[in-house]
Amino acid sequence: MTAEPRRPPPAVVAAVWLMVPTAVIWLVAGLAFLVVTFRAEGDAKFLLWIIAVAILGLCLMLVFMTLAGMRLTWVGGEAALRTPAGFTFGVLLVLLTGLVLFGKVEYHHTMLPPMAVGGLAGVALLLLETPPARRWLAPR
Image (cartoon, rainbow, N blue to C red; front, side, top):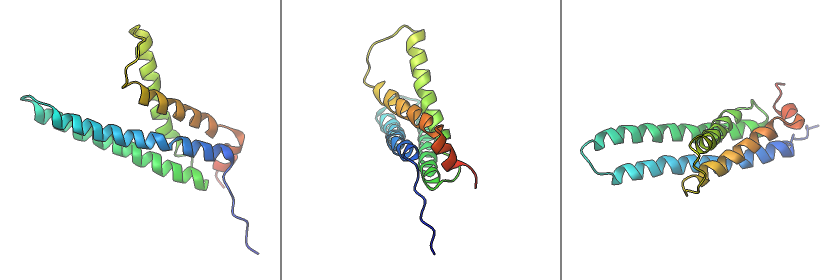
């Protein structure tokens, strides 16, 4: 007799799929900062390259953490998806706090991606806290 393969609950499936845009946006953000640095002009361009490589490294680390967390959550391992989702949701909170503190409630096209993926990451965090997801991620 073979055991029936276990399938993740819908909350886990939704949380994992909601984090796909997060991984894509972090990758695009790192590469975009590299492109902007390439197009920069001035005497201290080498300092910008140091910062650009550091930011690209951080973005790639977040992409890796998100993809690895998605896989571990999908198979029912530890809930490693909470860390990149929490960081991305934190970026949304920093953005919203800055808007409120500075009284600047106007639209800039650069605000939309962090707000969108931050909201998706927040929903993913909520989905990972549901009872079916907790049972799925509980140590066996």
